[in-house]
Length: 128
Image: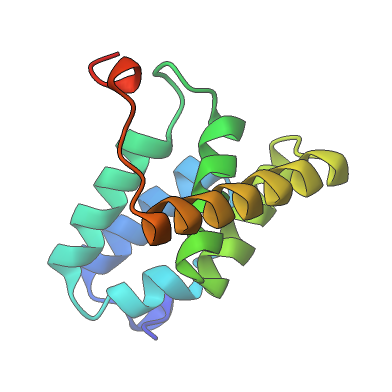
């Protein structure tokens, strides 16, 4: 992990932007790990800002909840913790989290059933 005090200038620049955008004095371990490759660090941060930032058709809480759903499905404990924290800060309640987990569980269950049974897609669902 590359701490702020040990970071080269190009990494500090990204760290400073992360802290400014997120209004925090904390750099989490994900960014500290990526800092070993400053090009990947910057590219990933720029993409996160673009995709997860305000603006677009989805509100920030919806984006965070989608990130949680994908992270649960991919079994990324770090991402689950990080984005659950962000979603809670954005207004996600315990009830919303519970319902989200129910949807994730149901979607994963039915996805596996469809895959196992090799169900063909209905014509009326295509190109809609």
